[in-house]
Amino acid sequence: MSNGISINVADGQVTEWHGSGSEFRVSLIDWKNEPLMLSFADVAAVLVMSPSGVDLSHLERSDDDPLLLATRDEEDCGSNGLVAFRFISAWDDKSVLTVIANSVTSDPA
Image (cartoon, rainbow, N blue to C red; front, side, top):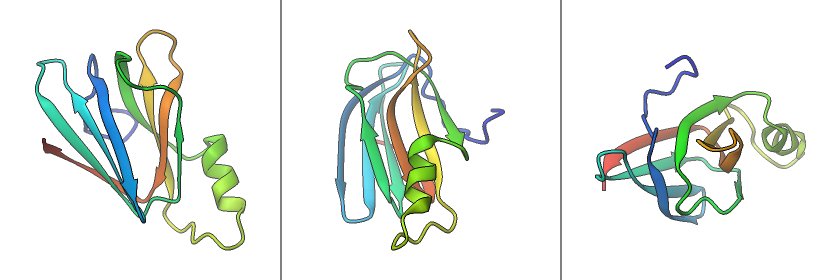
C-alpha cells in the first residue's frame, strides 16, 4: 500500500474497540467476514467518531493529522515516533477512528 501500512481493512467493519494504559485494540470483521484484531502500542491519543458498523475503505498512516500535531505539542507527552493511524470510511472518505501511536500489528481474532 502506498500509505506504508500492509493491513487490509477494505470493506471491513469495526466491531469493538478498547484501551488500557498505553495500549489500544480494535476488533474488525474483514471483507471475508473473518475477525481481525489490531493492536496499537505506545498510544498517546484516540479520537472515536462512531466507527461501529461503518464500511471501511482503508487504514492510513498520517504524519500531519491535526490530532497528531496537537498531541506532539503537549509538553509532557513523549512524542518520539508517534504517527496517526486513521480508519477511513468507504462512504465519505473521512476518518471514523484515529489512533495516535508508535506502531500497529494485526492478528486473527
